[in-house]
Length: 377
Image (cartoon, rainbow, N blue to C red):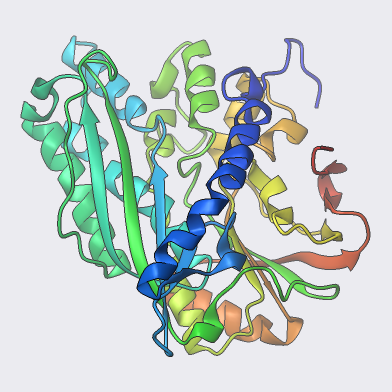
């Protein structure tokens, strides 16, 4: 791909090389605290430290409890920007409630998908919606849109939302925006369903599950690209959809699909949501194995437009966005039919993307001639 302008990088906005050391140091420093629950006969399952969620052993033979907390990021700012354009009279007809109706589902997907990735069935979720001004939630279109999204997410994932928190953080959060986060809890039953990557090995097939679009990662780069274009979020895609509306497509909640995999008795070895770090997340396991991707799906039109408009290289795009694959599974090839059957039952396309091979830890995307290796310590 030839670029006439300097290529854009996500690290110019969000630099994981600067953030990750803090996370790693936090895990190291907090490790001593893991012994504290033992006084109650409760223990943290050590293999889940550093995974997408943590499992807790209550001493009950049949199940673990799982917990996760995640933030949404900046996706709500797309809806806010589009609603503001309409408010100041740009001749654009939009249903403002609909603009905000996927945001709640987006936040729920961020935490529920991570929870389900260690083998947990989610049972409850609670949000934190921090505002910079109490006036933000007075707007009934915005408030009802947000509630619509949480309500839809709860029905999709079959979880309870027993409460939440709505702090007003004047001077920390801007008056015209919000910061959304949330936590979820689930159970891993039976305990043998726990997924920590222990079973990853050479010869397993790598399966990809389609995404609904950008989901909620790499959105800051998408926003920066939209700001560069003449029509911004109202830029027309080849199908006629607005770029902003495509970016606001709600994130897929994968926990019902993973429940169906359990019903199909699929021998899952590991599951990885494609979130921050993009396809480099495929090598989350610390084992020295090579993940060779030989088949990739065609990307959604919004990714193609953003790559061209950025411009954004393939190397950068696949380590920033999900590029059409929101979840990766590692399982034996003999389970291919069962996995695809679960996908059909869930309305999701499943791709056989490649295989795990012996070798230095690396993700190789053959069709794009690119690879990702872990940063050397």
